[in-house]
Image (cartoon, rainbow, N blue to C red; front, side, top):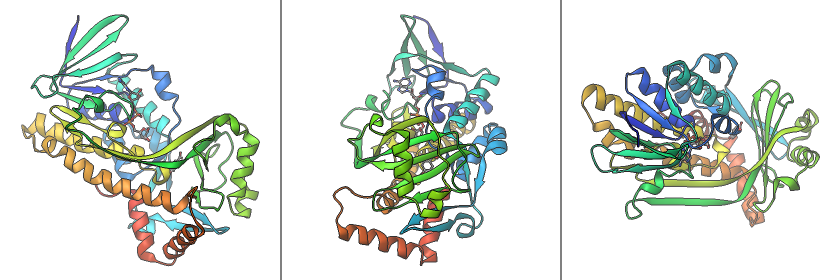
Length: 393
Ligand code: APR
Ligand code: PHB
């Protein structure tokens, strides 16, 4: 069995793992990334695309901001459609100038892979049966299988950035790990289409027939979502049926301007709020979807992964460059404090904008009153805006 040596082993070659590997490399800290799928598979995933300013700054610090700054769009606000009208949340006005960047997660991941390649980063794809070991010892190790051979890497620390279904969280003893979960009784049917976006900025729609979202990847690539029952399957929805239902949930003038076309990707995603505590066990640290999931309504999934990576990166810097392990000791508590705030915001946005299947007339009226309050209160809009652009790290 061949054994490698490194400082940090990162399980998972998604945006969290790659961003950490890139940031550490630029500070002379070595890492190896173990990814179970091929690079094409990882890059083939269609995920969200709204980046908080904290994430944007991290990408720039990682030396990966050039294409994002060139091709991404700065958005100073977004709209909420309700009762047939459009109201705007002015993010910049309510946050002293903060904005968000609209730039697809797939592009973020591609830029991180390119940067890792350019610097000779060690990313092992198709690593099967990855298993962390000796988590509470000073020199833990990770094994995996490749081409029928078992391989091993020894390290100081292991980062579990292997998503919700990964092996890392499952490696924490059940008596230590506490999981909190809320599964929503609906999903999002998403369509990607090579059509111009229906609006300059995003539109979140609350409608008696259910939620809808008009988002974008560029001026020629649009992303739309509608709320569907969890029992629905993609094959139940033709493109024509999707466009027709989307139009029904948008104000008439917006629907009139919607350009439709064939879907180049169509999928249904369940909605879940999930948090695992603690985010550290011995020398194993969880980051991103491995530790928490948010419903996509608040666009917080990728951004929460980034704040985890921010705290971990600075924890490792202090440890390796200053001999101070305070940041690593405080990682779980610090990351979870921000995670729960984003979980609250995403849950609140989801309840505000979705039609609860069992919801009563009273629930609908309360939802409308919540929106009426939002658009009649500067304070409420400031609260929404500061959460949407991203709470401080
Ligand atoms: N061994 C190695 N790699 C694994 C394993 C395993 N056992 N299990 C999963 N992986 C890989 C996956 O194939 C994936 O590429 O770990 C990676 C995890 O990446 P993501 O799921 O994208 O999670 P993360 O990097 O934390 O990014 C979070 O992704 O799902 C979105 O909304 C979420 O935007 C958020 C972002
Ligand atoms: C997306 O562009 O895919 C997107 C945008 C905002 C959200 C969720 C998804 O809240």
